[in-house]
Length: 479
Image (cartoon, rainbow, N blue to C red; front, side, top):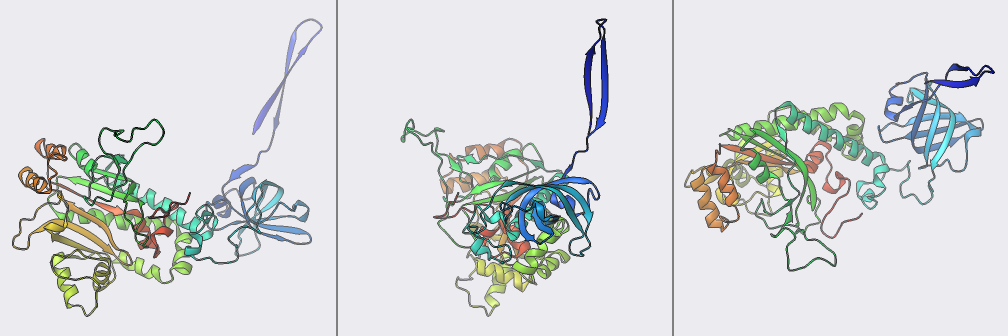
């Protein structure tokens, strides 16, 4: 960085003389650990900030490993033993300045020869619940939601989650979808299941008998109906955000707060149009994650869920098969498997049924279409295919998880939709939804994908609470 020093001298004659002196001051270039370990700035004076992962003092030298969360691999710091001090421990935050050089060690191709080490934040490693040389289970890490991001496994998960988010947004942008920020607070129950969190203000000025919004308001269970509003003006829309469900379950499959990717496509009369978007998005996002998070994904596939990489590769190599609900029931009834739930036509498919169907189809994702009409919400399009009577609905089932995506064509025919709402006693509540059909409606459809379930599918993680930063579930809301 070049700087100029300016000094003014007064002469006896009263005149002014300005003397300008130029000098060059060398400033350390700040690098992330991921940049440093990749060789960026090799030979230059650099500064790295991060947390100490290991300390190895020797008689003449001091060796540290420092990580700032930008990569799974830490940067090795080599310093004179004179730079060691009692505050330099595992977990302490440091700022290191020095020269980035090639390392003689194969496992550490680059190392930072430290000239200065400054401890920014101290850590007491004795009380720290994780030991760097020990491998802790995901279940154990779950007890410490405020600290688990500092472990290799969970920091890898968070980098993968971030990259998967980017990949999904990129897919929709590249394919002409408009992102819509659908509301978190809503007055409708999209799914009709009634598992809602009601929103009410708190405080001494709140009148318990008066609704803040004049109507009951809830945390959203889905952005679908708001996307349908937008699909009357834009042919392709999507949203990606938090959704909430007051389901009293502490199982490994359920969360009270989770993220959904939802899309709506106008001018379509075919489930095939929807399944194409689902499959293309799944492939695009997964290929992106595998390409951009190589080390992080490998950590899971080698140490957390050994053997799962072969399943992921198989999912990407083969086209996803499509079967109807009726065909699925036939498969289940012919099976020798002993299911806990019945498999008669008209039953809702349970997780055990979904996982069996996936294995039956080669342990790759499979689409199940045309569910019984009575199993689906009011907005699902009536196939009018008596006597079976099905709806134009589709689920994507995937290995290890079961249902990943659920979608349908929407009922755009005003007369049929009105009858369905009348039967459910919802015509007045959803009068605005009928308006969408009155004023320029077109055949359209959409789907929702559970983002945490997607991460489970790609990484092979068994418990959904291990793929979200701060899990919320029944009787559990830490932090």
